[in-house]
Amino acid sequence: MTGGLTGRAVVVLPDLHGRADLLRAAVHRYPEAHFLGLGDAIDRGPRSLETVQQLMDLHAEGRATLLMGNHERMMQEGLRWYRQYQATGDMADYRRGMEGFQWWMRAGGETVRREVSPLTLEAFPPLLEAYLAVLRRVVYVTDDGHIHDDLPPEPSILVSHAAPPVKHARHPNPLSAALWLRPFEGPFPCLRA
Image 1 (cartoon, rainbow, N blue to C red):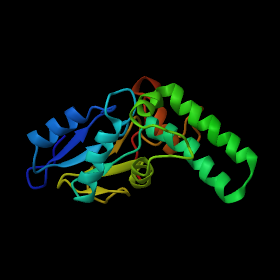
Image 2 (image 1 turned 135 degrees about the vertical axis):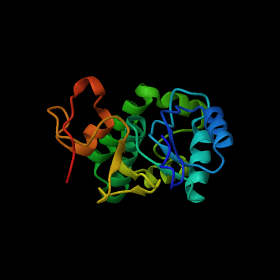
Image 3 (image 1 turned 90 degrees about the vertical axis):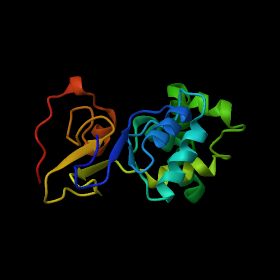
Image 4 (image 1 turned 135 degrees about the horizontal axis):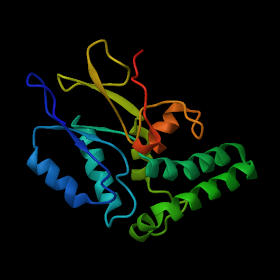
């Protein structure tokens, strides 16, 4: 997707899954563009940390808006509970942290573990934690290439990792649905505020 004729180009980056080479190729091909990462930059591929570092560099330059994908959400789960355990000392939080971490490992996080040694909740890479902190769930892109967190008054395109933020039987939180639902689970109603 690119912005309208009067705006900046916005290049959408689909699931990169650790393919830093594909990200470099996109940046090389569109050197003036603003990049909109749809999430799932990590897991499965050979270079998750390098991919995240490139995205964070683009973000710091104001050249990228980064969305959370379901793989980032899985990575976040264990860390979130572990940080809560550090604050509370509650062993139930620690258990939830470990369960969340194992969920991520089973779903693709083991490839990140091959890059980072050790990769534990206690030794979590600061780069990945910083990456989680900048991720958004849903944005709107207007014809001029500007990206908004809230629905703007002018026509726009809603962008999320997987689906519009709708209530669903399996995902009562609409922002969760935006990470997990797939097109075949639609149709999705037109969203207007």
